[in-house]
Image 1 (cartoon, rainbow, N blue to C red):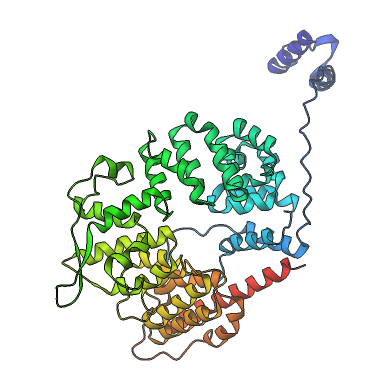
Image 2: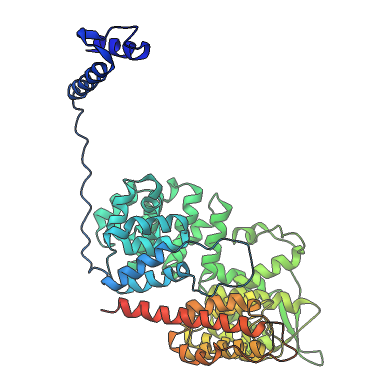
Length: 526
């Protein structure tokens, strides 16, 4: 057959006038007919290849399906394209739907819905481009996400994701399955497994890690040790104390940090003894004053307990060592050492020379590490105090961390008071630490401050960060209060040109986003 086909090709190339058609055919039409018949014979004569192996069917998802209206909303959120960077500094008048996707996923996961199968590829594509979405997407997508990831290498992150791999983890009390995955699993699977076991039984997690600790790589030991933040307690002290002798400096530092978060640990006691030797109260002065004598050296024992000997550029050695000692000492030792009743009185004491900032900054870090609400309140001070930096915090970033130690309601009330006293220009970091949706008082404070900024005649994009947070965090019930702000106000002679119209557009966008969020939650409600 191949020889006859070659003759047909030659005749076609040279032309039937110069080359006879094979098998007695005549003319171009006969040549094409013969080529067509020969093509059919060639194709029909091919030997079929082996049947490809069919993939294993996707595992079932026992969760209830997402309601139809909510599934349609999800499709619209996933279709939204990211906004191009650069360009004008003005915010668009329509909501950025992709910024609402994390909130939609959180609400769907809280209700225990299963993802629509036809939207799984789009969900995985969205998570591939945004790592912040991955945990929520993989929980919502369920076991089928890992099944799909095995068929598409672009979604391999679902196979190695830590938090998102939770759906494939064995039950923490299934000792045989836990031991097998711990011995055979990928690093991310083992990290997720250890975290899940620590939540269920901290002692079992400690035993699981202890069985393989000497053979783990240094970077893996560091990540595994970080899981001890979950369920950290006095029973972990022996393991962490042994980790102070680890070969890796980072592992030693993490172990020391965890031990210092246990006020009753031996390390905390050693650090307290060093810290109180450096700080005392001088009652011989006209006003009782805290005096500081920073360490003159960083000895090997201090290094073993987590003190880093070399300061960063621009820091003095002695102040650097002092800060680490005070940060790691239990806060409960200071009232007795300074002769005061509580944290508030300790923070109010005068401090000699320029040590006040260093001492208070170390107390701030200690309060955050030890999750001490009393010291956090004292260091935060009153939200309406004239000094926006607070009596102890050296920056708004420190204040934002201190707020994390307060209960959610108290945290929201404090930030609302801060905004009422100081406005929004310094409140962005503080707002980021408040629970979503914002409490009613905090939401009112934000809306009132935005209204004041509008009346002052400035442009709204000076507050674009707060506006973006408000779209995601403001309670949709606050939409009624925004109705009166969507109209273009009469501009004063001191207002920036066109500012009133821009503010009206911004409030219209904010109101539209709140209504959209309310509709999203309604669609997810059975």
